[in-house]
Image (cartoon, rainbow, N blue to C red; front, side):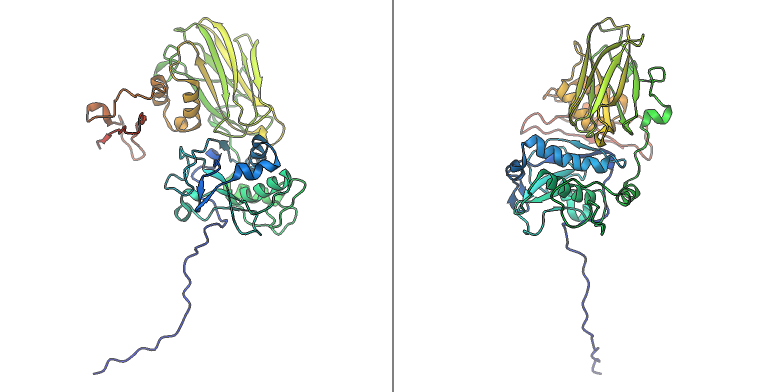
Length: 422
């Protein structure tokens, strides 16, 4: 019997989108800990060499045009729970395999400049992390597009930053999300823009200290742990606390007891680098409420230090943190870092890197141990051979436990070996 032939009807099959450079809902893991970096000229992006520094130098100094871009991101950040910290960019090619957030080689948001269609000012790489990879969240400025002023650069960035934070285009000409670029005068988010931003990302919430109790006065200061394995350890380890200013009127106060094992200079630092665009002020008082020193920043990404000399080891210090700005840079995340300068083992640079990156993910005891080990390039070869030292262990195992160790690659040929036992 001859098999019957089926009749087929021609149809067009809809395939998944191949539009990589498009805006859609964000896929960030934590918008409260975003970072941004400026890819150096020559960084390979989609087969081209990035030219941000040479392209934008016509608008002003590097510091000026970079701050213009950062200010545009901060306008959105100040309206929600977003923080955007500045970090260095290693210059590795855009889109290389890596983490969506907290990749040590570049910011979660990378600013690059390459040639695009002449009718496009800039693009933001969105969709989702599965399709976009480490391109996700990057801002691509068109080197073929004439940007006439810093205002134009600001508005251009403000528009794309809105996409990066999850906003769609607006039909309101007053909105920075309107599709036509305004080249003079700086736009500001509309009420509708802010409502949409908060709906996607959420409002800024009290930090871990304010959740326990308000700490806006010296009398109500949050007491930081200075003893035990998570404490000073005789001055070898710094005391660190991460917090946020939720508004320009917010104030945070902390109480720090000196370690009896150390007498000498003690530094109190306010770190915002790598954490946010907050412009802060730090004031240090003694137990009697007398001001020992203060420092404030006039620009974002400026860390501050107050040095107290001649400590005896029995003092009580109060650290008061507030903002030095009454605009969008008046809120954001920061860290307070106290060090016994004559005994602390880790360098200031190493502490700064840990504070801006993995520090918040470590429990206090592990963090203190890491910083007591310091930043030597040679970690004692503790992970370099099969021995009991490289067995990563957890004393308590639950459904949310994780195993980790922090080490260093000290040379180009160094290899660290790890053994996990469950």
